[in-house]
Image 1 (cartoon, protein in one colour):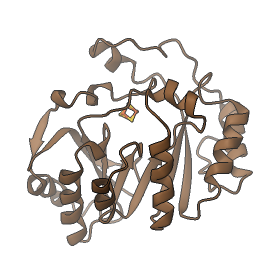
Image 2 (tube, helix red, strand yellow):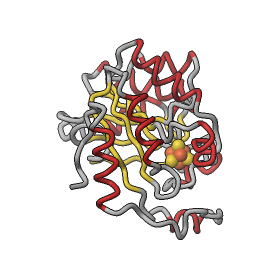
Image 3 (spheres, protein in one colour):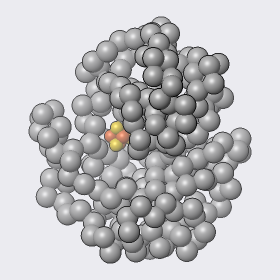
Image 4 (spheres, protein in one colour):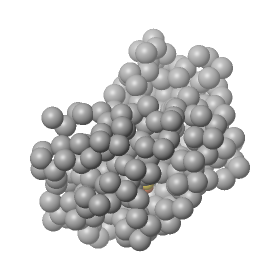
Length: 244
Ligand code: SF4
């Protein structure tokens, strides 16, 4: 079995606790308007093909550096290749390495559930709470992600929720309240991050010759970010106040 991989990063600090080996899988069924990894969309554009054992060897090389962190498998959408990532996670767990899965939660299948058995932490993006607006933003349905989130609660899996704040798309005050109200019912959420939309992905859209709808979209101001953080916090969510 081989995994189709976009790339990996040995010292990631943004995708989970501590210093982490971050594996970016190729392939994603979503088409987020703000995606900054457009080059991961098409499975055929993979850059590396590795077995789980070969991947684990790369992780193991830096085991001393990731002692307080671990491995995060991201993408793309990593659950497009469930058998491969399950095996990588299994090998990591066997060797005492903390495992995190960074996902949109869109692929909620029995094989995804099997992957979760080897996952210590899920970084889950709930990109919008309104199904129509979610579809505009991602091109897919919201329902599987909410089912995924509810399953994570059922198995009491630790979760960090992430929300990209995009002016004009995901910053409506009423929607932010709805999102926070929905998420506040979960008892397994350890942290919530608001990620301000930025334009750093632009070169990749150009490189992939795709139409970047948000090319001229503004980025949120500090005040707008703080306002969103305050709304989330007012529902008791553990918002990481990184934007002050
Ligand atoms: S889920 Fe992630 S990789 Fe896929 S389109 Fe959305 S932002 Fe891009």
